Image 1: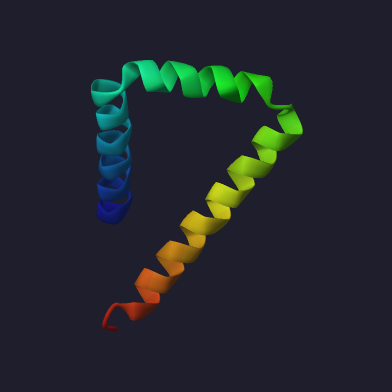
Image 2: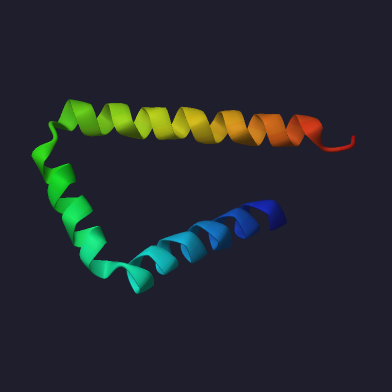
Length: 65
């Protein structure tokens, strides 16, 4: 549970930084996302999910047991 809360905190830090440092860029990115089809957005989400799971798997495997 502690790890899940830590992960959520890190996600919120990164998201918060993006909105705090470049709000106009976020607006442009959201507009670009609106131009994509639902299938393209779904594919992007699945790719991001796959990369995230792979990174966690690699890091978890490298940690001492």
